[in-house]
Every structure is written in C-alpha cells, then in structure tokens.
Image (cartoon, rainbow, N blue to C red; front, top):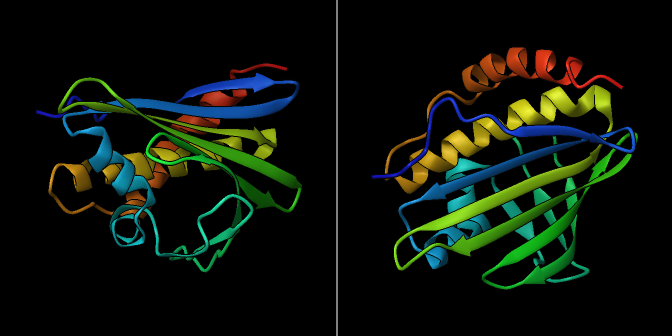
Length: 169
C-alpha cells in the first residue's frame, strides 16, 4: 500500500528572500521504477507533461504543458538513477528544480523534489502546481489515472496563497 497522504503539503520556506517549495514522499515501488517515472518521457507524459529534448548535462528538455507554457529546462547536473537538477526559466530570472530518488528498501523509494530560487510572488502558484503534479504521480505509481489537474491546482492554490503569506519577510 502506498503511503501517500491526500493532504500532503509541501514544505515552504524563504531563503534570502526567495521561496523554496519542497516535497518528500515515499512510495511502495523500487527506486528504479520511481526514477523511470520521473525521467522517462513516456511516463512523464502520463502524470506531468509531454517532454522532449536532450536529458544530459548541458542539454535542454522542453516541457509542453496543457496551458501552452513551454519552458526549456537546462540540465545542470545528473547522477543517473539518483538525482538531477534543471534550471527552470522565469521572466524574473531563473529558478532550479532538484529531484532526488532514494531507495528505502527493496520495494520502497522516496522522492525529494525541491523547487528553489522562486520569486515570492510566484511561490503559491508553483507550490500548487507541484502539489497537483505529485498527486498525479501518486495515481500513476498506483496504476490509476490522474484526476482533474486544474481542480487539484485550484484547491491547492488557495491553501498555498495563505501559507506563503504566513512566511513573513
């Protein structure tokens, strides 16, 4: 049984005035399967978005979101099977996403996803987006179909706006 909680919320923080969104979630699947779920274009299309490109250090991976947003992510680092970091372009400079997969036994693994260097005024939206995407990843790993992303995003966004406001300065 997967240990995903539907009420899972990301950790939110401000570091040097910029927001950090961090998820840590464990599933009943091995690390190789989880790594494939977060790196294989066919599997990413099922829970995240269609992607294409050159997923090597220095290469670019283009994400095709349903809303027409098509960011080109530059691969900054990759330790195959364990972790990668991509630069996520933004109008107000760039942010970075770190993804780490850890084995927690023969049939359990943990994903740590951290989106950092976010402008504070964008943090609630990105936190809500990642909340919806992590929920879709859970459905994918459980063999189900993801639900309505826009509804999940909308519900999470309300919570994230309040949580970001509570961070103070």
